[in-house]
Image (cartoon, rainbow, N blue to C red; front, side, top):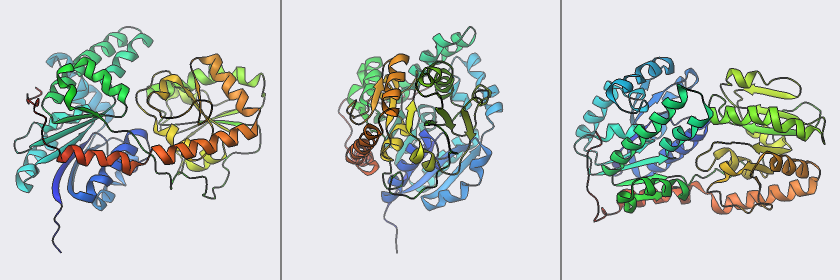
Length: 413
């Protein structure tokens, strides 16, 4: 039976399977959605040995794929070329001649006319003839993230982060100008980019994150992974990611002792892959660092309160949506609540500083009925507002829509 799906190029900075961390959850669900209507040709990188075993699974959704093995240590060294070329270091980090040639070849051979780049640096591969529809899913405004890092680091890293923010914003603007649509995960991120590039405002849109509420559901029978003891406060996420590192170090050092003034036996579990040395050093006195786990859902299901004390955050956090989908009470920092459509005090708790974070946790630990009610409200909110299918349907609209009259493409060199 002939396959009448149109060919499409999908470029992702990290293999979109398995969906076991924030960016991969989004990129995988986009891939799955695209594969329903397109024959997907995927160009991507593998930057962790654990992902190597999953390369073969890509055939379930892709007509063909080109996978580049990326050694983060070597790529960090290669990225320093940006200091000589005057460009953002993120660009040479993800630059590969073989991938660039594959893109040119597959676009010409397959007659590909549509392309989606996931994350800003992958837009450098869209500079190929033949494409008439280019969409960049920036997710978050990465340039703003790097700029936000700077005040929390000493020179020379503070200088390097400020430079990266400025150089990357320059590239993001030029890449967006050469594309037909630029998507962000929240309206706040989209508006930030519109302010930086007002001439591109007509082509800037929002595609929110979602959650698989059947997979992340309290209805599953999941064994309790926690040994007997006091109440469990849980944080989940990739633990080599600096905002996550900063969050758990701050929580364990400054907030947990205050919680223990009321609940001396409270335990803090940090569940996530690749814990950095600073995270591993926290593993003492009721703080548990697990590293990679096969399934995060048992931890979510049996924790007492989920905490997200991110002081630096961009966009809607998948970890928050997953916890809410599991009908768990979540205490969220105001930074990580940006764009979240939820009612504070009903669907979740939002804290604006450390003392408020502590008081919200203590209030929930003291009242099991409030925890249960909030968890149930959280799940209702997620099921109603955060369906992947509903959010990603807008991507097809972008791919199929006529070009805005204001569109004028300039190659992002």
